Length: 482
Image (cartoon, rainbow, N blue to C red; front, side, top):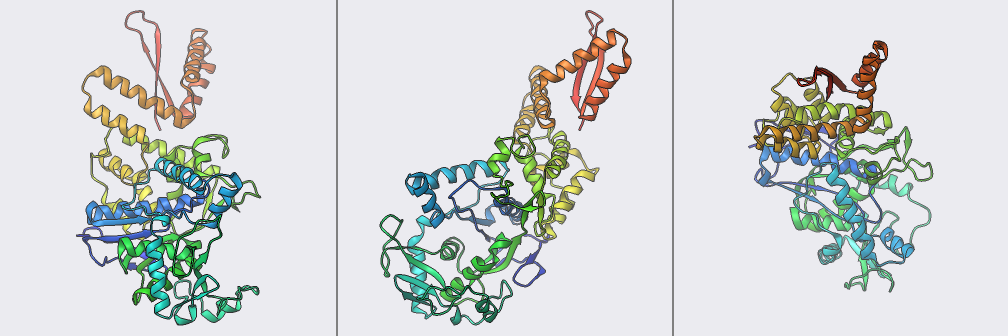
């Protein structure tokens, strides 16, 4: 299992690409840090969700769908959530329910598969308390003024993931350090809660967990003490992932927490860091549902493709031009998938080889664009990468299943309407252009008639003239050609 298409992945821990060999090829285990649900997810949040969805798809294909366990958590305990609830004057649960629901809706539009498990921090506080107790008992953590802190000095090789020495990190620590800390680098495992903050009973009083301990406890619960791959954004390497490693290794007495650490690069918008103060902060929901970015709504498959057009480890510049390019490529893919249902065809070996080389989605997309392979296999490859318009997939399945000509004709009409939407044309406007061209033809104004024909062709619409068999009048139909 897994030998036909070997996988090589870049390991942040070792700073090199390595052949991937799961601990147990009957249960390949992947953990990815999910969202903190205090607000709608921005487009930067979407990058790890999409990147590791592709990895999940690849692992399922190579090792079998029943042999991959993918855990992506929801952080629903956080001071940002508390502040948002207080600002809105609503219960904390209202904030987390609303933003979690929007997150699920957004990523579904991006073609993201559901993970095997999606644990929420609030459901696993008991496991966090147990892990903290083990750290205290083992001499790696201490209680102070209602807090419990991890003592980094008890772990000599702390900093291996981020390649930072403990002395350098101490030198760079802030001057103002909490007086109850033994060392400026010690980090919070548990902190006290006031009456108006969420809290749980613990040996150290009523309180709530620190951020880092959440992932350590949930990863242990679903994947074990040591698992195969841990993923997330590059911004999480330090301190979050570094602290996860420290907690987990010291609690379990293991050499590693995960064998492979994968991190996607930063995202900026139109050449600048995304920031509300700069006015370039954009959420997934705004891209999907509003005209805030580029003066139009963007389909989920276009956003996904735009994200995958850059290798996951490289920085990405999120621009309108990038989305326009992705829209054009997406349209060509739609013309491939329009004839075939998702379960037809076989994924191209060259696509699998590209993805097996440290998840090279850029090369995989290029293969589909340039390959002269059987169209049904090209379509299967588009579906495999999650780059199809789900509405077109439904139409393709209906076309296959329905046999009567009239229904097939209706299906074709539905498909063409969707492609018009992708191009940005309204069918009534297209009809008006065709009517104007027919008027020019009747007036023998061939130059204007040709101008309309050529302008539509440049947008991807080809006009076809014929004669009405009953009246002999000129008839014009159209089809999308790119």
